[in-house]
Length: 446
Figure 1 (cartoon, rainbow, N blue to C red):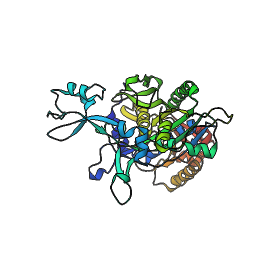
Figure 2 (cartoon, helix red, strand yellow; figure 1 turned 180 degrees about the vertical axis):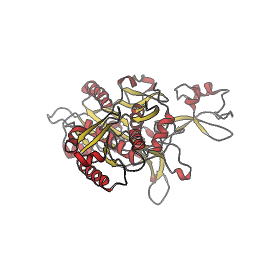
Figure 3 (cartoon, rainbow, N blue to C red; figure 1 turned 60 degrees about the vertical axis):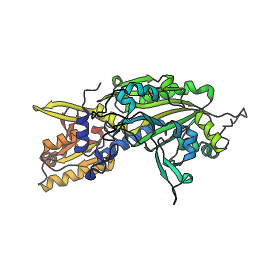
Figure 4 (cartoon, one colour; figure 1 turned 30 degrees about the vertical axis):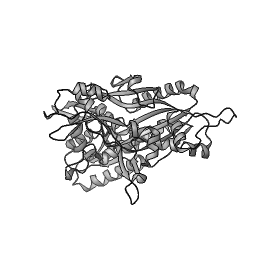
């Protein structure tokens, strides 16, 4: 388990503008968070790394952006209407609801068994509990002017179904060879009974998912290719291998559509929990959408061999959980000058700000002018560069350490004499003089 405390990450994330409680001035909304400027940049960098690793790097990947709203029929076909459920109990006094399996400490959904395990148990507030019942976690709404059975719609609980319902469109439009994948990044919504642990369990989250369509005889090799690809991606994110664990899910615990699932779990501050899922969904989804829609979703091989319904390998990444994992792995403390220093040891590619440019003092026009020239040069080359001229230089260094900025470039009076600047390294706090003309090469950034 990680030694990092969740409270420390939450505090840093708010203090430095990564993540804020949503609608905080109105008391917030449980399970919903807003990303601040630095959080947006960090999340965007993780998205870009995922995109380059699994979409643009593959010759057979087709990205889409499907709608968040979906008609009820889609989720009947997918099994979500019947199966996307959790067992809940209610505090009979406070009316608060809880996951029944969480109160028992046993991961089961059978109501009869849960009833036995809950006998005599009290709520966290010490009150009697109702009997367990099944609760569907999808968020239901209505489209159009009337609220009747014909206008029922749902906010998607995963991005997968949009990829399955667009399968025929991709095949008809692009005539892809088998295997091929459909990929997308997007918002999902789950009416979690007890959202908790910061970004880990949310009611509004962002997923990065791929449905990879394969011949039924080829699923095992595709599954292994994705397993190793996921581990390589974690390495790029800077997640230590010792904090990653592969958990093979037993048949009785797998989702209704899965014939094999591996959960990649991470050592979060609150324990070893799921970070990414890799599932072999067989032909469950396309077969059911073919049945419910009445449309032929078979794939016709170009060699004229027998048509078939493809099977699917699904790597599903929760982007918010990846942000939390990256922050957990990067959160570091040491001692500098007899004082505790907090810094984010982020991989350079993920750091929201690559370089900070600081004039030694801000009330000297000649220093500020020179610093602005250096700032513009780096900004034009690197993009994510920050201008910092408030407070003293030591405090500014600490602020940049806390947001994970790899390099600080300080313009001082010697700069005016010899066109050199001081470059400070985040991880070591070492400093060296570098000529302005050699600055880009010295930083080694792109």
